[in-house]
Image (cartoon, helix red, strand yellow):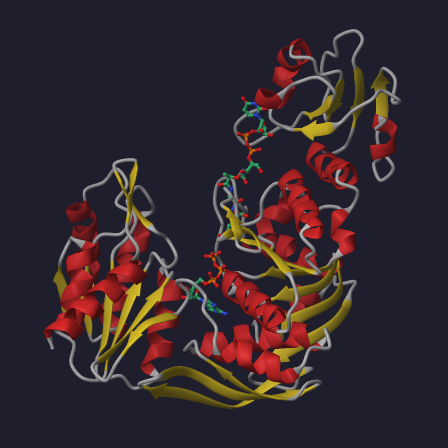
Length: 489
Ligand SMILES: CC(=O)N[C@H]1[C@@H](OP(=O)(O)OP(=O)(O)OC[C@H]2O[C@@H](n3ccc(=O)[nH]c3=O)[C@H](O)[C@@H]2O)O[C@H](CO)[C@@H](O)[C@@H]1O[C@H](C)C(=O)N[C@@H](C)C(=O)N[C@H](CCC(=O)O)C(=O)O
Ligand SMILES: Nc1ncnc2c1ncn2[C@@H]1O[C@H](COP(=O)(O)OP(=O)(O)OP(=O)(O)O)[C@@H](O)[C@H]1O
């Protein structure tokens, strides 16, 4: 392939060399330098990879993309662009021959609910016999193959490479989580989503290396509505008007509380031994009697959002209904065990906002007691410990403080921080640092009708202690203890 052929969508100035030079790949990591590749230099948050030009040229690279003044060795083709990250995305799209255009693409953004909603959309499509590729916090999923990723939204090159694999595997649909950081870092440049879903927004991801303030966070998230054909937005979000301000797509909305294109009405929280979840009617542009086997008011939003997207795809309603009634979203409000004695839910809530919405929503199921098993991560903000301790003390009937990923801190020290805030609330709690023992205690001492929320780790299958990840899955532990209890009964 001639380099020139990958440049059609790019604005650039030629610094030196011949654009008809033969190339076969694009790279952005100097450690992968070899012959016949284009090296894209970026000014990263930690490293400025323009510094690696001599090194990559020595390794055989003859084509460079730069975004600042740099010394270009003789015999090397170089172009200068306004943004290297944007160039990386557009070159990658061309390199893989625009694979996203071979599928129907759905992008999901929002502070909360991205993972849950993408899983719901995938489950609905699959129940209709469609092949779906999915990208997000749980990795790149193509059929039964799961590739873990560093980021919720991976780098543009990795995205286009995955799209190519999806198209080759026969996927007709691609559904992905798009973080605000991905827009900021140009990871999804070159993609025009067929459908763009906006779940909600609240202050998060503000700080060094992320967003300067809430306005910046909102600005980048809202870009989805400028990068999709049809936008589907939560009408109940308090920032709705700011979110849609600059939208260029065809806009639709969903709501639980007001007039919108898609509405959820007659919402019932169902808590039966064999089914804990939600029932509601979808009204507006689509009609469906939905039954969803995941509890919580916010999951009405997630399910309604997923149904709204799928309503555009002309799918048999019976399959849509069946998929929602038999969902399994690993570690997101997942009912791992339900019996007459108690219901155990595993959830990824790992900050006070998520914890509060989780506990408040479980309260709507009128449990005998609401029990919360949780800890906090080591080497992370201490504020999280104080705020989670405060929330649990106020909103749970009983809390069991235990280990999360302690990393390089002592679990006991982390628990001490949580204790300092939970004590002030007067809430009832005990401390059991070993997470397995803590979960076992909650189940062994359960009273009929208790709801036990084991939170913070969700889908994670490890516990990180002193830099080592030991296998640990809340889900597995709950099931093991349930089996032991049933045996001894
Ligand atoms: C702040 C941030 O977003 N950083 C992302 C960014 O890293 P960077 O480019 O700044 O990294 P850098 O280390 O300065 O390197 C600059 C360049 O030099 C190159 N390099 C580096 C070393 C070397 O020897 N040779 C070399 O060529 C690198 O390949 C890179 O191209 O680009 C990397 C590749 O895409 C990302 O993995 C990395 O995400 C870091 C790990 C991160 O923590 N990001 C968070 C903030 C994030 O993106 N989060 C969102 C939201 C999650 C959510 O909603 O919960 C996400 O989508 O994950
Ligand atoms: N629509 C929602 N509104 C508020 N909270 C939610 C919503 N959906 C899920 N949650 C809570 O947030 C947690 C994370 O949910 P999910 O993984 O679906 O969101 P996400 O946007 O992918 O989040 P993250 O970026 O933290 O991975 C859940 O475990 C649940 O406690």
